[in-house]
Each structure stands twice: as C-alpha cells, then as structure tokens.
Image (cartoon, rainbow, N blue to C red; front, side, top):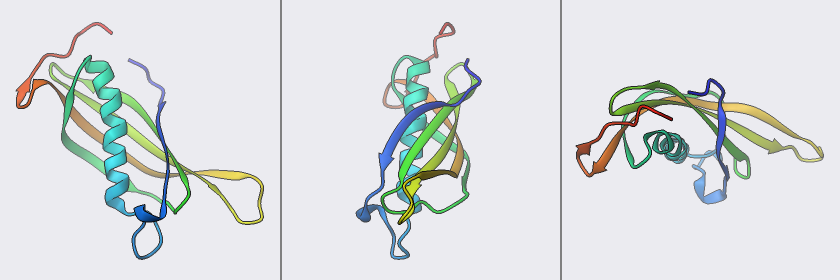
Length: 129
C-alpha cells in the first residue's frame, strides 16, 4: 500500500460548472472527488466498486472557472470488502498579467468504497497487490 498521494484525475473547470457567485458548485467538486476516489479503489479491488460513505469532506478554498483541478489519492485502509481512500484537490490557476500559475489546496476528503460483483452483491478484495 503506497503512503504517497498519487495523481489520479485532472479537470479544467468551465463556466457551466459554476454557481451564481462565480465559483465552482460544491456538488460538481464532490462528484469529481468521488470519481477520483473510485478510480483508485477499483484499481486496488481489481474490479467494480460502489461508494458507501463520505467519511469527511472539507472545502478549504473556492475553485474558480478555468482553474485546473488536480485530484490526488491514496489508500488509507483496506478491509475484506471495502477500501478507504483519501482525496486531496489542488487548483492550478493563472492570475491576470502574471505568466506563472499558483497551486492551492482547495479540498480534502475521505471516502469508503465496497467491491461488488454485481449490483448489491459485495465481493472480497484480493489480498495480494
């Protein structure tokens, strides 16, 4: 089990992802966090997984239109049928008149996924990686 966060997903935000305040809608960010976590969980489970719990979700900073959202994941626990994934989200943004981007942590979460063989049927996660 790796102890380091691994890059899992990158998405450029768009105007239709924003709320009326001009920052990215929290529900959009939550869905991307779930997708990133599920990628890592499915890789470890060697097959399909379903989300069963969001143990923690923090919005630390706003995400803005045209930011590039980078999602990093790591496995923090493995059970017989479940895997817990930590997800951290960083925004890469450019400021007007500045030729360099900055990266800021905008969110972090912990989610639990269960391995399934078909809808509603749990399966064991292989013990060897």
